[in-house]
Length: 476
Image 1 (cartoon, rainbow, N blue to C red):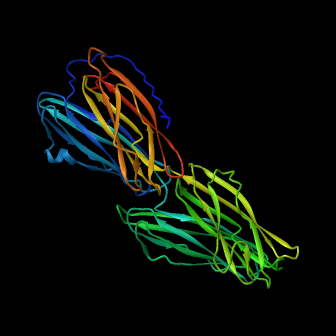
Image 2 (image 1 turned 180 degrees about the vertical axis):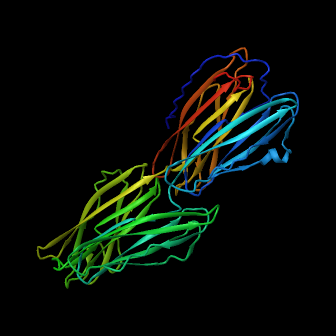
Image 3 (image 1 turned 180 degrees about the horizontal axis):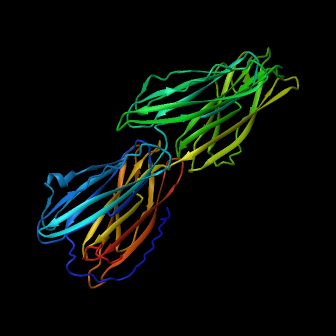
């Protein structure tokens, strides 16, 4: 596989600083953007304090109280907040978004390093945003289409708990009228990874085109109290005239909703032969103008064999949606029914859906190593977690050139739910090479799954070098 790499460097101004502003420690990273993280999921990064003096130093933290962020003193606590010469310790900063609006959560962490009368203060700037839902809900839009008056037709809405803890449901009902709902197979509490469905029904009472909306709420208390709501849109229309041939087909339109890239969902489009003679069925497939994102597979249930529909039989085509990219998709098709007497019925089917996210969570996506003392180095891990439904492979790219480097343990295959790490390191040049400079790099990471979906994930790095504490009037 061709390795995709784009690396850019920029060296900025050179500034000499007074000797009184001595650096006591490399504090790394100085800024982290965790990127878009699934609502309720937790990502973390170590903040390393590396003693670059020949004497012990003590450290203190100003704490981290911003919503969505948490701080663990980690090895710094076990070392009693003291660092010996040339040694280091870590705090661990975690981010758990509590909504999926895409709004950026900002935060900052103040760290103080001291040795005798010398002090060094650093501000670690943090950010991240939330995406996706606690549960995958599909479909979120159902148009039952033309339905003979008095006939009842139903479609299940499937919920899959994609959160790491149990969720409970609220709402989802429909006000009195031609639409109704029941809890189907859904319990009050749904375990992580489990699926169930709500059933939505339409019973036409007249020829009016009607619509309704409802909201399914999902609630969890772990790792904190969170609530998420997904809107369900319903449409239908009554028909006073029996079609020829007499066959009912529903739903006429499906919006699969927001589905993770590389994840497959499906909905049955049912058809029932209400007449007295067998019918033949054709069509209903796609011409692949969407690159295989939508699929249609006949399902031999209810006594149907091949393309023949016996009198009174109810059969189905399973329509699937497998998004390849983070964008919206839509297409349509038609199912045609024949009665052998020269009559045919065309039942149009429209399908749509939106891909969100990527095959894996890559976090953090943007790292500023901050000031790093001459002739030393610091590292930050970038964790890749497989959030898709099949193994990932063919990892490529992600490489950088000096003074940055990258190592990884991703191997040839990454199982569903597993993680691997790309470790990025910045090697600060010696004082003879430069007094103070800033470096940046951007690289592209790629990987694929068994269906050949290949996202491209940018990772940006920056760092500066010098042996003085900044913040004494000098700009960097």
